[in-house]
Image (cartoon, rainbow, N blue to C red; front, side, top):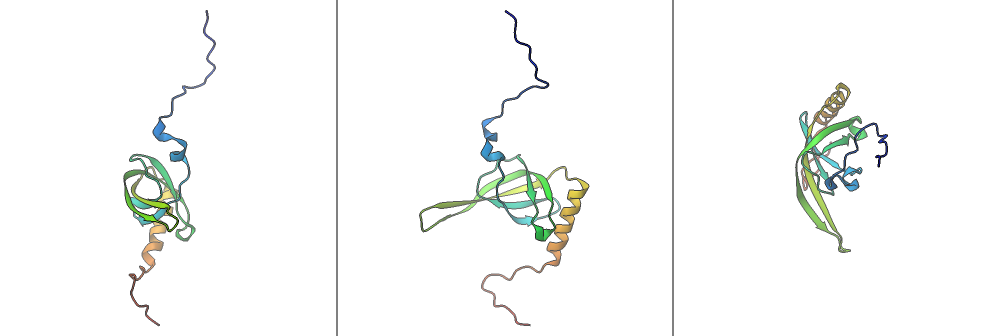
Length: 130
């Protein structure tokens, strides 16, 4: 008996379960810190160390998509709502990888905006009048 002709143009590889669709979906993140080397982000689900991911800079920082790898992740805090729901907040460190010159320019512009912006007053500090 002859085997059917394989018409594939390339090998098909199985996708490990840790790369399930939930992990590949877009997830909302909050930028906590930004630097030339990477960023700290906050998000609702745990991320896998080594995972390549992308962060879109918010419009106020000039927009741009930056690629990086997760270098650490941990559960930062959790909250219980009055309805009994539990919200988890993870934080992860990302190291930039393979930034193009355009991405490096977007990152530099975002850091310049942050440098020129005065830091927020600590909670409980009275506001000064001009």
